[in-house]
Image (cartoon, rainbow, N blue to C red; front, side, top):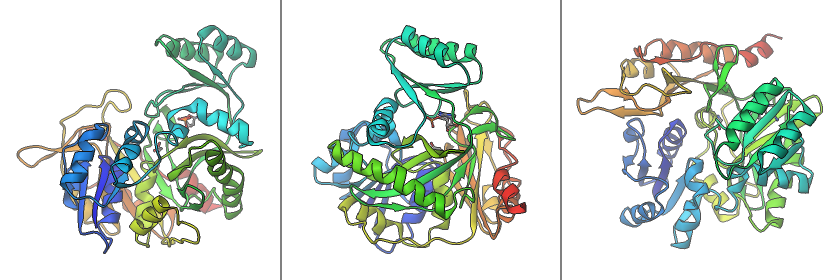
Length: 422
Ligand code: AMP
Ligand code: GLY
């Protein structure tokens, strides 16, 4: 089969790496990809949100199946566009991608179908939003309605912070804002493959969202991750499937927008049980990197079964080991990252035992050098029989990488290690 993967991050490198091992694949193309992906796939310099250009690529490369990685092309309707032209795609339609594309849509769905989530209000004018904030007081959470690459959310610990965030969002014309009750607890990522009607839970994972050690500083797209997430016990996983994932899948059918693809629930484990923070309609990054390392089964048949609506009774096998990913980011991230700094030692890092280095925001210069070309630049991943062992291997590899323009957290996995020591 000829396969096209859409995207250019660490998630897409991990997906391409896994898919390139499938005996079903004869040709693997990635648009636009990155230099790491170029080692396992043919790169096509096509913009994922240019729907016609992607369609033309499918025709030119005789593509049989498309896997869409990031949210922007999903929300832009890439799956609808390609499917209408006869190309089979893994990923939700534009209408189903509203679960991620509109926080207001997601919250209203939860309210309608009794899915546990934070209490909320939805606002189109600054004054009513401000009155709501003053009524409920801090801590409180202020969110932009649309996609904001993880940066449209302010968890305000004071009233002043909440009011400032609200004013900033409403300084944009046409703004829509969701204001939410603050939930306290441990945050985990839950992934399920969905075929419209049936859901198959994937292995659990947890990421570190804050930029600094000890989970401090501003939020990012994720500075590291590990799988499994020991906080998600088997009983909790069942509860999440029964109370959150399946009611959502059924709710989307009832709304006339059946969901196919990966449903990624960001959950808060509160003292009142798991509650939904947000939905994403794609794999998490860097969580996906750890999942792909642990997956023993062929990924492609599972993605095709989700697209074809035949996921029922499907099973996937996972390695028992822990996989852990340390994200290396360019200085300046999550603000303005510095581009063009040279990265050396990648081969030495990849030669460490049980290590896999995935590229995200990298570029290759004419002289062959790998340089930083984005915020999150590398995912240095490792396996181990425990979280501690995986962490040691990952940092041994990180220490082989010579990149003065980059940084990483030194404590990825600390919560899970604290649990291991109990
Ligand atoms: P979101 O994009 O909605 O997941 O928000 C980004 C991050 O903000 C989440 O991963 C949480 O760390 C935090 N967050 C979002 N909503 C809440 C909430 N209601 N209570 C506490 N923290 C939240
Ligand atoms: N790591 C969280 C995300 O992909 O949004």
